[in-house]
Image 1 (cartoon, rainbow, N blue to C red):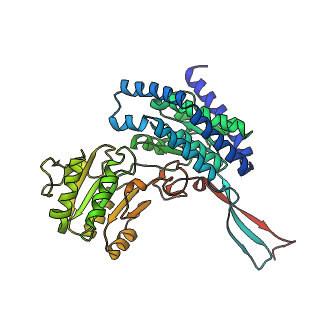
Image 2: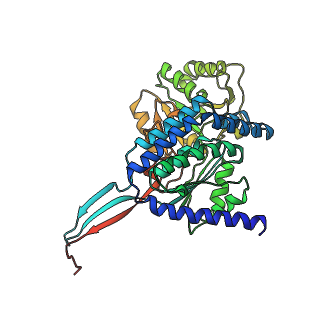
Image 3: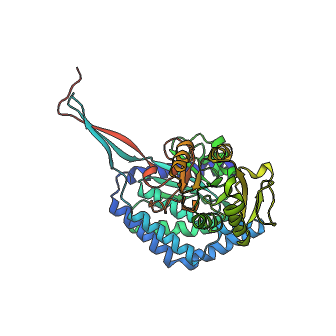
Length: 421
């Protein structure tokens, strides 16, 4: 066989084994799934030296590829981030088992009783870039929801993903669950991605997690259904009735806590009535925090601001950069957001409940926030334990995709000799 045939055969075998594992996972007890996840968490903590050594190799690779500082930050692990992976695994383990949950039930005059219950999707393919913790999050959420998963991490996180996957595999062994329940594609070859996107007989859904290039590729070429996780072009609108202290703290946190995540604020809209006062104060604080401001001409602010271009509206920087613009009113803010957002997360800062109601009603982002940092756009912060991504489409799953969102449903119909007239 040539190399292409080898990849095709490899992926076909992975898919076949995943489908067999999914059939077993669909009826696995919550006790066994929980045991597997807690054992995996133990393994991650016990093997952190090996994980950090693997991550060091990935960081060397990233430097050789001249990855941006934001991408390098996403890639890097340290003891704190490993502790976060452990906490995420334990949090997912502690979540209620969604499989078998009764979503609705009712009876018909014909004598039949009907239940709609959650059921696993089957086999999920997750394609992701850079951030190695996705290996743990995606593996855990798929396992909790009774799905087998095929993980294809980015080439830059190749060794870190392998080290974390080994811990998931150890957890599966402890719980006597099939090793094929969580598989990691063992090659950097991009042909493996192309194969995964067309494995309609064994893969039920693809979840891409990464930049616009990756998501666009998956959406264009996948024959398997896709949960889209597009860019986080996140806006914050400072209304004329914004509380100054809240506004300052929210904007600084939303932009600077971690600039390389999809919930980081990328555009600040300021009501014209407060541009000279609160708006200037917030922009000055951003500059002092090391943020580059690309501002619309005429916006009051510090001298360090540079002029924005058309390319800055609707740009996901994933860096210490923010676009800024003044708007006449909330209508203008909503119009701008509709034109440039990615339906991920948008926020209004105000004490005016009527403005909040309008903002929430007229925008269709997956997540809308009021007086809260957009860095809360995260499944863990939503109480889901972790997330496989933020889905920005409108079908099936939307917003943070946790274990419950990785299920479908089926109808259970019971009768007592019922026949249809």
